[in-house]
Picture 1 (cartoon, helix red, strand yellow):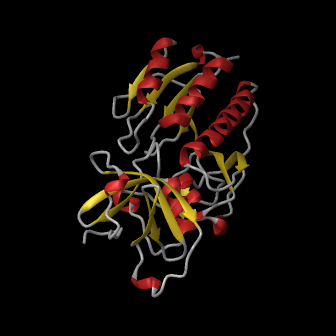
Picture 2 (cartoon, rainbow, N blue to C red; picture 1 turned 90 degrees about the vertical axis):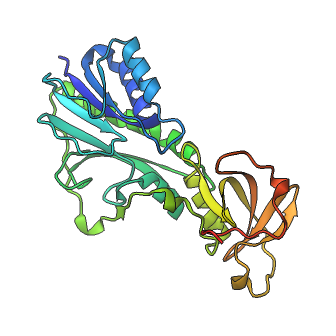
Picture 3 (spheres, helix red, strand yellow; picture 1 turned 135 degrees about the vertical axis):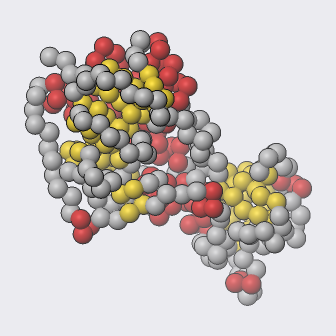
Length: 299
């Protein structure tokens, strides 16, 4: 017996889940897909999601469009960031191992903090965000350094695995698990905006490396200032530290330039910048003056 499905999808993870679901269960079980554009990333997979729906004759709507009165058995939200108000059963897929990192940008914030495991939680929708009863979880160990794009590739298959398992149970009319979260173990991951892309050079070089990797592609990239010019930092690597006299007075300064790559004094350690550009145009790193200082504010 089939069960009709409605999807709320955002980004690469949403697209991957949709593609895998069509391959496993067929497009005929999908009543509707709701998608959204995401201006905060360079590739939001909106067009690809819409295209695969058109290819398989699946109804597709963009967020804010009026929803039809069609009845569905179950809805799944993958990567979705907005409130969903609907009568049918709703299952949320969240980018963390709940109850840790409830809220927004959990994967980015986990990578910034250097969490050794990343994962996905499928949970029943609730009035309080990401506080619903847990259906299932999956996780994977990671090794640093790791870029956000690679981390997404690691957890995307976990989404499909969980959804396929859950939908198989729904097809058999099995009652889904509903494990209460331990609220005292909960932590919250807050939303990030453009200001949160700024590098704090007083951090350690290891922390800044994790930060740059966590906010890189498909996001816009970490940013910093030299005087009043914004630079986007895409690739960095730690290098062996040296004894910097009065280090706290010289944080953010270029100490060496090697192979046209500036090496910057951090609160602890040194960081080599191997790929960066100005905000609006590519900039040859050789043009960076040796007497340059990176900062989190306009000089």
